[in-house]
Length: 400
Picture 1 (cartoon, one colour):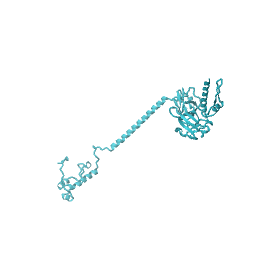
Picture 2: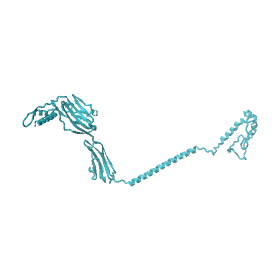
Picture 3: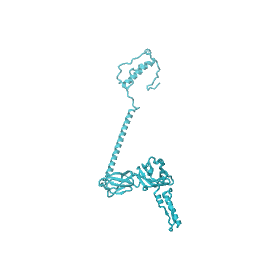
Picture 4: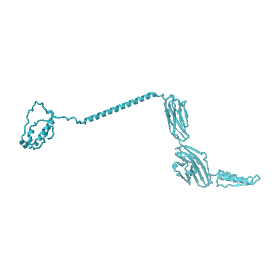
């Protein structure tokens, strides 16, 4: 029995030391009695339980905030006069992978604040109270990002006591860039679907449709899926026309979009097709006509150009009476100086003004009004004529 009571006392001492720290000396008074009970000093126990470092902000185990907002992670504590060591307040980020090391974010030590440990939060983390010695070691994280999600631990040290507290922070993204559109034909009697999708936003997203015009009630045949954001409308009628709004929601925010539905009677498809065919044929005919006109015009220009520059070899050149006569007389005059006296008799028999042209031929019954004059050989010499040899020719023009 006595050994059992002694083991009970040892267990009680160990438990009290864990609670109060090793800076306290607990005095136990043992008293033997018939019942085997041992009494502890009630004064020492109460003094232990009411003294020592203790974190008081224990009601914030999980926090959810939206991206871009500010969050305050609480860490308030109380001190004891028996805690004589310097005060240290440290905040660390505990990684999800246990193999990785903890990352210190900010720390208060020896009356100084160190906030440049974590590069991803430089300029975004600070102590709520600039002087944590007041008992407030809470921190503010500004402009939250989705990568800030994680488990944060506050550690308060004042020798010989050490206390800590963990807080789970979840950064959510509000719904954003929500788009509404219609899928299907907007004709009476047809089935169509109004769709709503948010391109940004943390799950779980919920969608809700409502009508803003007319009766402001969704059609009776509509079917809403809040998870996918689809609103199905069966056998649409003109009464379904109007403006519809979709609101996307999650735990940290909302976003909305609008779409206008205009249900109309079916279009005359046959008439539309016939009009399209006729219009296409007319367009092709007009195009062919223009091509034909252009080709014809081009051929005409090409023919005119060829005729303008064409020289036919089988057609004699136009004859000129005056030019022929002048050229013949000039040739005769130039040949006077090259004739010899022996040949002058034959040359004198040729009429001076006779031109070998069809235009100067006269009927046989007519005689020239003047007779050719003869030039004597001595006169030709005085004129500077030089005698030359002229080969004889037959009647057909060949040289003899």
